[in-house]
Image (cartoon, rainbow over all chains, first blue to last red; front, top):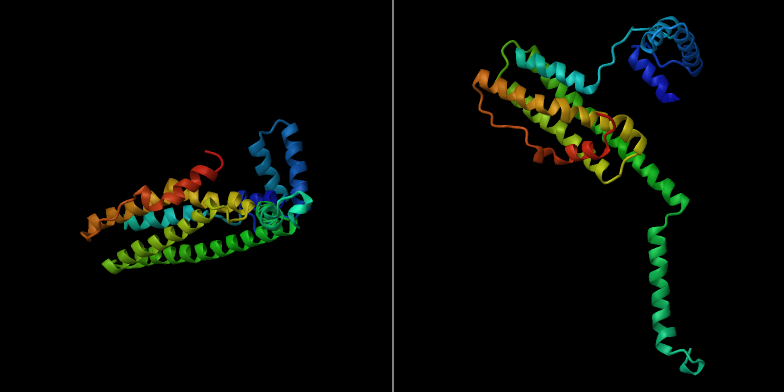
Length: 77
Length: 168
């Protein structure tokens, strides 16, 4: 389950990894929205915004993204 | 034992002890106790952590010289050379990581969640880009540079990605 919490942090740019309780609430909320006809992706996003700490407060770039960004800057300099 | 028991003495004196020794050796060699297995898992975990630490240091060094080039008003050949060498060290470190993956000396959970995505990003993106950027700077600035991406230089990275990477 730790992986899911970590994945939530990365995907939604959270300020910290959510607790198990927070991620459970998120999950329940997503299911509720989906039953109302909201798409999975949109339900996940809305529930994260409403229930998880520091939604979109950080950007977690992967190592490859960081290297790519720097290399392109260097190339175009 | 002697031949009087009906069993040839060479068998009891030599063959059986040797046979028992060889059998014992083979059994202990090919079957691992629970504890041995735990020890291997622990060693693999420690190997993996060390590889990640070293990789992180190489990554930071590579980023810092890329940043130095970008920050320089008029980048020199030294700036360029620093990128070439720090990049080489970064990919060399990744090669060691890939070697450890191929010889199954890493924690499998960390391999799948962390090492393979890193290595895959290299083969898909950063390795080709590193060389093409260096070539394009060298051309633009008229620096002497003949580096090119050869799979054979990074064979273990490509092999590890082909064998262990999950997903497209």
